[in-house]
Amino acid sequence: MSDTPEERSAGDGEGNAGDLTHTTDDGDVQMVDVGDKPDSERRAVAVGEIHLQPSTVEAIREDEIGKGDVLATARIGAVQAVKHTWETIPMCHQIPITNVDTEFDLVEDHLELEVGVETTGKTGCEMEALEGVTTGLNVVWDMVKAVEKDDDGQYPDTGIENVRVLSKEKRQA
Image (cartoon, rainbow, N blue to C red):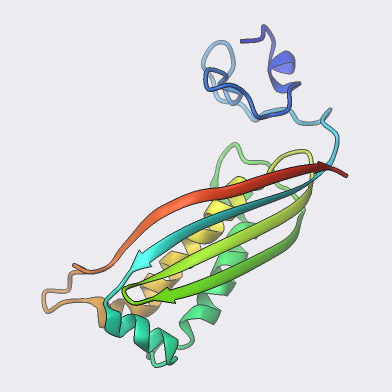
């Protein structure tokens, strides 16, 4: 590990598993200084899924959920979450978002959401993509909870899983 915070953050930001770039030598948290890094075009794609009853997936497909258009609402929620990631993740930089794309795939017993985020800046956008996926899936859950509940008010068939970063790219601007 480097001796000073400046030396630790002077790298490409990718770091080794042993490098804790968000901590000082004393163990205090800090935001990584990216001021000297050149701007790069960056893209990150994240994905996740929500398991639902097959009848709920069909109701979403046919736009028959009482609260409204599930996919349109989840798309808006995902985009809003991407734009506000820096407000909810403490050491995340505020970055200029240049594009957000969302893609839904409805399968028999689940819905998959993929969120792609693009930026031109000094740091990546993986956290923004992950935040978009998790919020988008939470919006789906909120929109369908009335039809997903069992007689006891529980959600035995509903679950968010497999949230992960599929890819990230960096090109010099």
